[in-house]
Image (cartoon, rainbow over all chains, first blue to last red; front, side, top):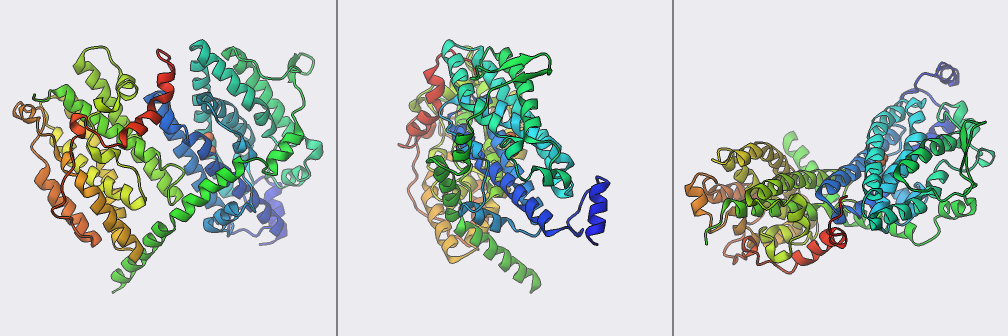
Length: 308
Length: 247
Ligand SMILES: [Fe+2]
Ligand SMILES: [Fe+2]
């Protein structure tokens, strides 16, 4: 196993498996990306999880519970994929809790109204799907396969989020206004989920060559806008962008420039929400110490008993 | 006054809904990700049971009320759940002790209902019995691990068992359902089977079975502890802010 073999697999668009030789940079890039993705799944449970106990109908409560449960499952698959590269889940969680690894800054926006749950499903899960579908073909086998499962579930989430927005936009005037407020809050953050413009995205070239990334940030962003604008029209809601207009010549929507300074502030983790999110995670982890210790002690006793 | 089938169904629906809510409060706060998934799953099963029961309650009542009416538009004094399920989550041991006592009763209850003279409930009982059997496996498995884990987990588990024990007698049936039993609509009493099964679990966990602790009751008749009102306030607030809205 060697660089040559690795290069040949990449060249042939075949999967790299855990036991294959791989360059350290490739391994590290993947661990960093998969960990950040896993962290995003579990931190992303929080803003919506807070609405489970307040969901306005039993049907919506059931759908939302199932969604948040799916996100925990996504975290589990992804931590598993990262473990296959030699980094245990406990270590990655420690890094999340110590803030030395990041999660998607999209979860640092507030979710003050029920409609935010709809907007998150529609726009955030929608953007995540656009980002993630290409990852199903990621050169690293366990990650690609985890993504196949995840993307299937994300598309349910996207549809369910849109259904919430549809009910609200066709509901009472108060509900419609609530839906518009949520769109106003989530439009630009969703656009920025595709990352900085290609010109400012230093790692894109290498990740594309390695088959970790398949499309550039700007390509994905355009796809997202093109897919989402007609959906907003169907809802009778207006994205908060005056520059948004169909460009027949390009066959795409033109749209305005996001506030990249705000994006940078969010990525740096400014504001009070990041502390809140990490605080919830840390508290859950610390409060659970004695439970995990008990499970480990019991497993040891059982092993000793069956050995005796 | 003897309880009618409507009241009986409502009691079961309220029990499932309130416990589902309590378990949902754990999501994102559980000791492991696996437990986030498991508790969400049990919460979801109970919610599903509550929805079926409320829909059927609406049919029995005959006033055109749907599942959301029973969940969102009744006050605490109209809820008929046993006190146990409204008790706060406490630490993980309290949640698990509450769940073991509940799940063991639920398994036996649904078993006893599978040959109810009421075909709607009998049909519901088959699926609910299988679901609750899984829940019991999960909760009893944890109580045993906690009881036979570390010194700290044993101490917490015993404290939790002691704290939840006073709320158990209500799980075993109401005092005004004799007529329903005589009519073959509900099954035989589950009390003695429950006592034996729970004693077995406690024994395996190495925990003491509490004795002579005075039982607290009243939930089945609408006399609740102070914990139900805030729970409902959280659950119902948004729906009640928009009367007549659909979601
Ligand atoms: Fe996800
Ligand atoms: Fe999702």
